[in-house]
Image 1 (cartoon, rainbow, N blue to C red):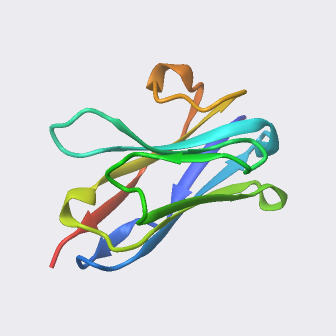
Image 2 (image 1 turned 120 degrees about the vertical axis):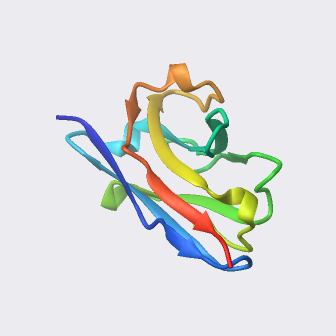
Length: 123
């Protein structure tokens, strides 16, 4: 069974950091592009970041550029999202998703999704 499992979410104060992990089971992550999306209450799911299968290419939403870093360890079958300088507006459920070939900002083009992990930024 192909699965993605996110972890690392939690409650953090503004200015703090968290590292999210997206672990794959049942398939080799090496062949897949991985994206992070997030969904805040009452809002649509939005793209946060994406990384190519090799890790050589990354992109970020303007709202997180310079604060978030996406990376992957194919040997561990895991993708990470390092989130620094967190703001209250980063509060959301964060999801990782997988697809082949190239990054896409469209949810419907990702065939595999994790269950999500809650990130809350509050004092």
